[in-house]
Picture 1 (cartoon, one colour):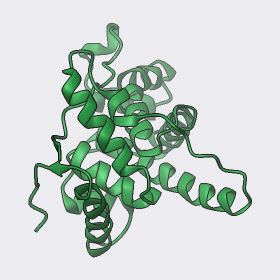
Picture 2 (tube, one colour):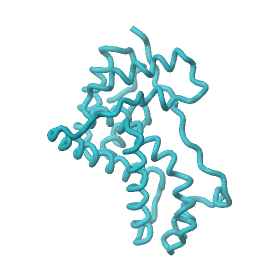
Picture 3 (cartoon, helix red, strand yellow):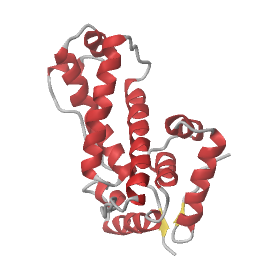
Picture 4 (cartoon, one colour):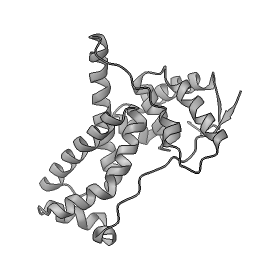
Length: 205
């Protein structure tokens, strides 16, 4: 049995530009005042991470790009109204994960109608950085195989916990479920993963 480790995956970096030195809080203030350049700067700064996260949760690049658009449309609308974030990125992640779960519900309906075809992308292996050792890539490919049979919600909770590194309470908040439900989802996923691969454990108490 291969001992697989959850590694830090490649993240898109913000695009360089004149807004790089302006803090998020100031850009949000400007966006609240209707400054479209501030809105564009926030999009350039955070869209890459939202896209990467959505892809890891959905396993579909086209859908993940849709999530980015939906997330920022919702975010900009709220910024213009009244929003004053404590942590902009975490707030955006919350919106994105909610949008992802709406996709899960739509997938379930499409599956009942025979209209949904799961994507075949190897998510974790694909997201690994270019410097990742081939042996680690093989381990990530095994993880992709182990995670494939999971329900969407169980897989998303596991990914948020073990790949994105969120605590249990954060996973529950992002998935908009109780802490006990988040624990059950992660436990079900871990049981299936352990049947194939040994993982470094994270204390879930």
